[in-house]
Amino acid sequence: MTNLQSLEFFIPELILTITILAALITDLFVKKSKTNMIGWVLGVGLVVVGLSVHNLSSVPPTTLFLDMIVIDPFSSFMKIVIILSTLLVIVASWVNDELEKYRKGEYFTIMGIMVMGLFLMTSSVDIIMLYISIEVVSIMSFVLAAYLKLDTRSNEAGLKYVIYGAFSSGVMLFGLSIVYGLAGSTNYFAIQDTLSSLDGSANPALIMALLMIFAGFGYKISSVPFHFWTPDVYEGSPSTITAYLSVAPKAAGFAMIIRFFHQVFSDSIGLTSNAIGSTDLPWPEIIGVLAVVTMTMGNLVAIQQKSIKRMLAYSSIAHAGYMMLALPVLSMEAVESVMIYLFIYVFMNLGAFFIVIFVKNKTGGESFEDFEGLGWKMPIVGAFMTLFMLSLTGLPPTAGFVGKLYIFKTLVGAGSEFLWLVVAGGVNSVISLYYYFHVVKVMFLGGKRSDVITYPPSTMFGLMIFTAVPSLLLGLYWNPLASWVKDSLVFYTQVM
Image 1 (cartoon, rainbow, N blue to C red):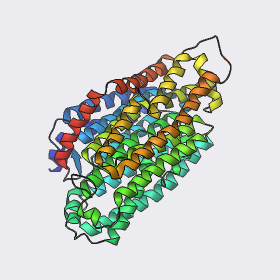
Image 2: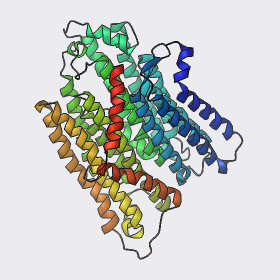
Image 3: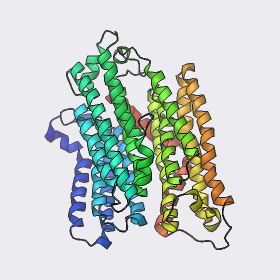
């Protein structure tokens, strides 16, 4: 499809571009104390973008701009997840005291640009577009992580993010260039056609390329051993940005991995094409081991943390490991389980971070000591946090249980060779129970009981309700979500 013809199906991104420009221009005419207005501009624009994405979800899958990006319900699903998480973080940013010293105009504008990059990450079917979109997201993330200019921890977070990000981008670009050299094309479809015609003998160049590409992808989703940036960056960034980095880029990262490996290096039943065979490496086993190591390391180190914010950073690494469990299979059922898990993860993880933001606004800290007695001083907040901890653990009847159930069901259905991943996932869920319930213990058994019950401000209370309700209801009735995901997969397979 030509560039002009593609514009008809690129409406969400065009609306987002107009929204970003509107936010940037509006910021020139408002006072520092009124810059929350820019958040309204971005929020309203994202709602319109979301409606436009929904309208395009019924359009038959098609490639745009000379086959550089694709529009399909799979990308539409991921874009809605990104929009939803962005809207929630925008609202949380209005009431985050950390940001009160700073103009928020640039903050919201940069967030809008980051959304554009995330959109393109989910839709890219060309390695040039893929790399450009990753760089857009990375650069915007660097700036947002260091947004608290007067806070040395935030400055350190931004600097570490830049160093790790530059290194991982360089490694991934080298791998992508090798793939281009082997295939003679940057388009996923052409690369798949070329690599699938290989004779099955081991190809050292392809082995090196895959390892480098997966290193870059692993950086985006915080998988071991590419996770080193995560704890320090999450701890030093503004809490709202920490919450955002833990969900939106992770969702786009998994969408990017699924599309790339399923499109280029697999057939309809998983990682078994001639291209993968030509590397002469047991890729399902390698990715499975990385998944187990990722969730185990994340859980074990989370136990040792004194800061709840840092604990949640390591928790996010563990959850990346849970989602990675489905990647060795990479069947349609595996993709479905990852999509369901990601959607649920948005609510339970953002909900926990929003309570951390609320407590930090009240106490100025984010350690376990700051949560002592919270269940008695603010029983509603304590109840919400308990729900989020239950859901992150994966206990019924919460939504987190459904997410893990789909992951484990996929592995069991894929054959006995994947049962060890189910066992590893179950053991790690038990390990995570310790540190999640340590938060509950501190809230209800730590500190002094208070007869004075207080309630959170209306905006923060609304965020807690909005994230808590799905975290519970999707554990009791998840059929609509499963149906939506299945519809997305049907269209997704048509493109594949």
